[in-house]
Structures are given as C-alpha cells and as structure tokens.
Image (tube, rainbow, N blue to C red; front, side, top):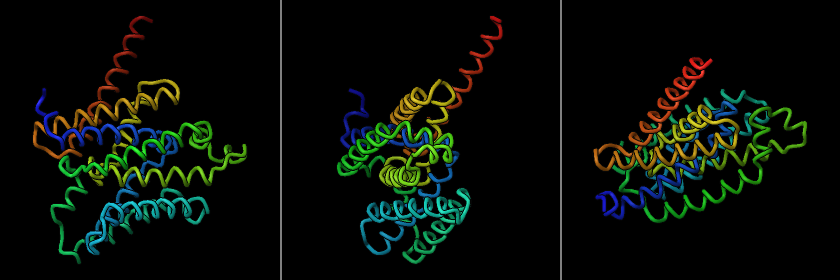
Length: 274
C-alpha cells in the first residue's frame, strides 16, 4: 500500500480534496461565464476577515468565516442587483474593505499564528471529519441546485437581461449562487487555503472550456480537472513536504497549460490535413 494511504489524516485530506474538486468547478463554471471571477477572491477575503474575528473573539473561526462569507455574498449581490454599484466595483469595495478589516483585527489579536496560516494556505493535517461531512453535505446541495436550475443558470450566465425578460428569477438564483460560492470557499479553506481557493473556482473551469464542446461537457471536464488537481496536488504536498494549497493550484495550472498545448497541437494537425 502506498505510504500516502497509510495515514488517516491523508485519507481525510484526499476525500476533502476530491469534494472540493467537484464543488468548485460546478459553481465556477457559471461564475467564469459571467466574468465574475473576482467574486471568488472577494468572498475569500471576507472569509479571512471572519477567521480573524473568530480568532480574536475566541469564537469558532470556521463558523465565523462561513457567516462572514455568506453575508458578504448577499451584500455584493444586493449592491450589484440594485444598481448602486457596478458588479466589479461592488466586489472590489467589499474585497478591500474586508481585507483591511482583517489586517486590523489580526494586528489587534497579536499577529499571525500557526492556526491562521493553516487557513491562509491550507493544511492537510487540519482536515477534520466534521469538515468532510460539511463538504459532502454542501456537495449534495450544490449538485441538486445546479441540476434543478441548470437551464436557468445557463441563461443567466450568457445573458442576464434576456433571462429576466424570459421569466427567470434571476435575483433569487444569483443570490443562491453567491451564497453557495461563499459556503464553498469557507469549507474549502482547510484543504486549499483561503488565499488560493479562488483559483479552484476558475482554473479547472478554464480547462473544461478549453477542451470541451458544450456547457455540460465543459462542466464535466472541469470537475475531472478539479478532482485530478486536488488529488495529485495533495500527493505532491505529502511527498514533497510543501503547502497543500500551493501544490493543488500549481497542478491545476499545469493542466491548463497542457490543455492549451493539446488544443494547439490538434489545430496544427487539422491544418496539416487540410
């Protein structure tokens, strides 16, 4: 049996990584198509603010991060939907405000510590059984949400105004998508890290959109790329003794490079045959 499978903490990390590899690309597909990639970074920094508040007040950091991320998602969506701020401006305001608040709270709480670094960059040692149950439950909710509203979400992703005119409840679906994204970012922090989890919402989706035709096929390909990135990255982190989050994201980026190379080779092959 490989050494990586002989440790209980690694088994938990691999299961958690696989769940993140499914969750992030499923939601990320609609985020990328809407060109809302910045929302991942925004909610990640809001979650970091929640972690800082939790540590400073000795409240559960994960729960504080979840509450903060969900409230941040609602705030961004309300600012965007009501037209008070353009979508990118609303996300930027919330991002920098949350980051500044987190820095102040971290300073008042005595600076960085080991626990905070595990939230920032991910730690294969910190994935607990409760994290897996929460990730599994969120995966079921996200898959059901996307499965039931796939057509409506696709319409919103390609043309929000046309979807609204067609009778789609864009306000509720956009809010649901934002809240689920915030929950995904929060629950994925232990595996990938709050500073890198946004990449898992974007990079595997780019792989899927690059090599697959059709939205469903692109999403399925993105999920495969996400799971492969998580498992291979965790294995590299275990054997190379490096940061789990960094290894996972670098693996995803390597897959994106390979996807571009593969498509370039296919294009050259078609041109040669022509």
